Length: 272
Image 1 (spheres, rainbow, N blue to C red):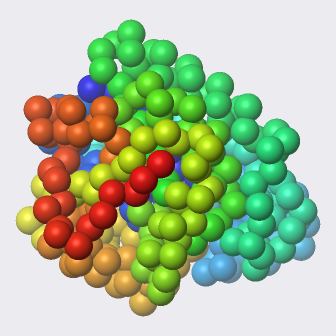
Image 2: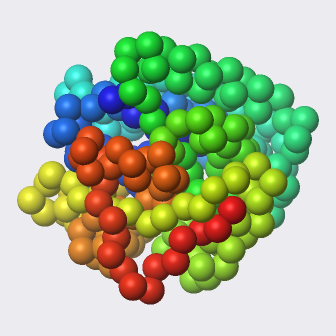
């Protein structure tokens, strides 16, 4: 099966899905990560003092690409990566980085048709090569780039097995249940079926330590304390990662070793 992971920024798939990717690769699936907003000035933990904004843009974007390449080396040849080279929200929308979680998705955002076409092309190629499935961000934390990428992909979820991941580190914040409610509200006119919680147990013997090591690879973005938080989040799922899957995903999940039901009596499906 061809699994297409939508990663709004370079670190999102790594933070949120590193264990899931090990599971999918062990099951013989092909994983392609589509990085969307890869042109960025955001590197709070990098010592970049170039006064020219254009030069800083190139330096930060290159640095973050190197971090992603190191992440790929963890999996050998098992994971492919495609970059759309779009500008992230502060550049694209001309707003401060401090407000990106307060902005609404713009229906006329020029990034949306580019993301749609890239996903359509991948899905078409994936279907021709066998089964295809999508893995998308829930948009927890309300970051406008995450929601823009997610919303651009929603039409494909009506025809493909799809699962939504809990965006890290945003999912670690207080009020995540409120964010899930917001997801229902955000997508009620575009997502026409319920979503159900599933777990992806990775193959590493020490999953928490593995997630921490992966997170620490993005040194320009986080410090060791936040890497600890990202890694520890999986403890609530007994060392797994939780996704929210549609029925088409559930129909394949056990046979294709995609995920297992969460089995949490307190977990409720996210209605359309």
